[in-house]
Length: 410
Ligand code: SF4
Image 1 (cartoon, protein in one colour):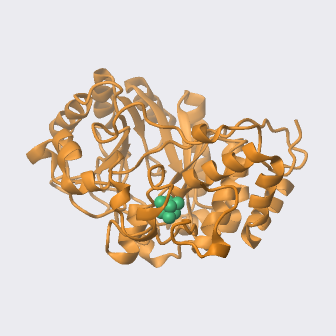
Image 2: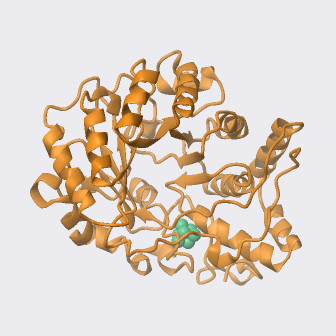
């Protein structure tokens, strides 16, 4: 069918607007990210890891990595998804061995490489054969000029497009990750078009946390965040979309489902509150899709996990963090084991009690399904439990009478 300007599509019951885990998020994570190395040949402007050209001499060895995978598998079913990231995991000669070991334990293994000449069809076939079923690649601009400037190396854009096509041809599921800042936000519709053309199965939009090299870039202001999230929800009828470090996308999904359940006019009224950026993104998307054959579907509900609550990060040395963007050390897997840290660390436990968060996140009626980005809270305030400073929402408990919602946020 021919695309029309994005609007709400179908009716999602508000209670189904967000997917809930079927297990206790405090007992086991759904997603574990393991940074297998910090070695990387790129010099990306927003690198969380401040990656280096060579791996650290104390990064987890092959045997230590296998012990970590044993420990993750011991959480039992449903097994966590394990994403091997970096740096560049393709810098590790034992990458396929680690993938194969995890796959043999029953873990879902995915790989998130940097796009360098090491990403060849042969190596993609090797990790696929070892048991990896998904690959994620970064695309932060709609053109070589923007993307290569971010990555610090010419030719990365073209290589990324080629790597994505090779991975799809290989039979891997491809997720494209895009970091959004004030500098590239207006390129989002064109990036979306590229992600759709590549036949990626998921687009993950990451809201820049000013940490690592990302301190030199400008994150979106809260009102623009809100506009982008509403636009993302609109276009999630075209492609599965997730947000990273923007859990209030789940609040937006619920607000919109409630409005749509009330009436199409209520949803239109909610969209009409959006700002200039939303209108620009919407118009640009309609232009890009005019005359294109597209298939619309119900938005894929975002999953209810957050830093330390269904999600954890293990760095190259085996140190555990609630997220890769939250530099609060929770213990080392070689000393305590990942399961014990995930279940018992006091900080991780505190991240599972959103009613004890400070400021508006602590009193927000959405905090059980959102809780705010703890990474943004920490990066801006130094307090992990502070309110997420990137969220534009004012909970009714704090709102002045004229700010209280009439129909969408109960
Ligand atoms: S106030 Fe906090 S908990 Fe509520 S929607 Fe915003 S970020 Fe989420």
